[in-house]
Image 1 (cartoon, rainbow, N blue to C red):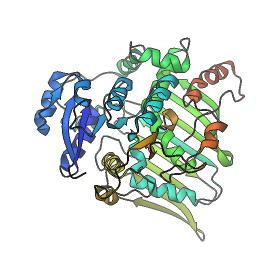
Image 2 (cartoon, helix red, strand yellow; image 1 turned 180 degrees about the horizontal axis):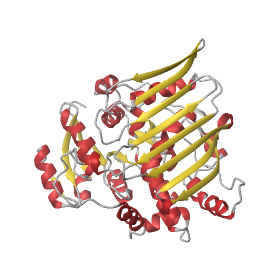
Image 3 (cartoon, rainbow, N blue to C red; image 1 turned 60 degrees about the vertical axis):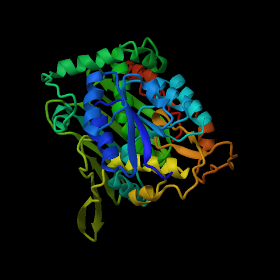
Image 4 (cartoon, rainbow, N blue to C red; image 1 turned 30 degrees about the vertical axis):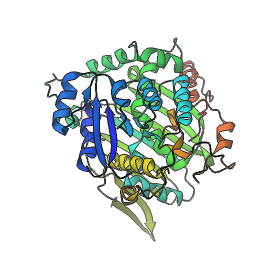
Length: 439
């Protein structure tokens, strides 16, 4: 490809303006914004003016069908099905913000279409490209006797982090109370769009608190699920799960390979403007901790701490691994995948991504869309090429045995969480569900 990757942006709200559009605009040699679409005319006019984009529309189908568009970035909130299907039907490569789908049926449908399309499909999990995460993963792989992992998100009101960005069109929003935030989350789960999707996962009879917790899981905590899979591999069983505060707080205990226990917590705490997201890997000789900043702070480094002993001395190392923005890194990786016909690999670097281009094969890729709990960077293999039993045609290791050992229904774990919640309410402490998807 002798020209920049020509992308159409569908959805021009907060995350698009705070992270993705600045990344596209800062490297005109790598990306060209071929057009933008949003349901709000004022938004696309304001964003189009800022980024000098002439093609602006409220009809995303019109945009993705344009012949001069190489790839589509789906950055809209809510369900993504209609955008994904339209982009794939138009023969475009696709980057889609998480989650790919909100139900088993929807996710599997999109996964089938992704594989059938022969195009690159990547689901946005930017933490996989965080330099501190990459170093931490290497450290944990060397950790002897890993026993316990804790992932905790203390989630404040997002407004203090959003208002440092000039999100267009400029609006003055009144400060909302915690009760209003909780009510808004409950209303969202009951919307015409979201309710059937959540029903398909947890059942129409699920309590409102469970539905809210599922929405939080799929839109926020899923990032930590993805981080854990990237480091630990396949989870084996959900031992317990519990929600409280109307679903605005949740905790679970999961067993991973090696009898490792993982506790995951997500708690809404809007009164203190301090976003805190920590993932701790604890062994008898070392402790490795990642502390992620708010995702809305560009280039804020993730803190990596490593605790160890040096003789009789306790050593506490604090590493600032780098200032690379993970949101930027994932889009550069997506571009590299499109241009080279290869997936972003574990050895991915910004330099290798920017150098990938016309000199490499542009064979179309078929995506192994890892979705729901599995949603992560797309794994690609040339379309119609037979794959060896344990490695894809692209050389990327696949795990068909794990997929068969559990299930091909990636949302089953979430669905089975409902009986877990019920068992906890009954006081039944026996495990009642298992994670059933493959990372």
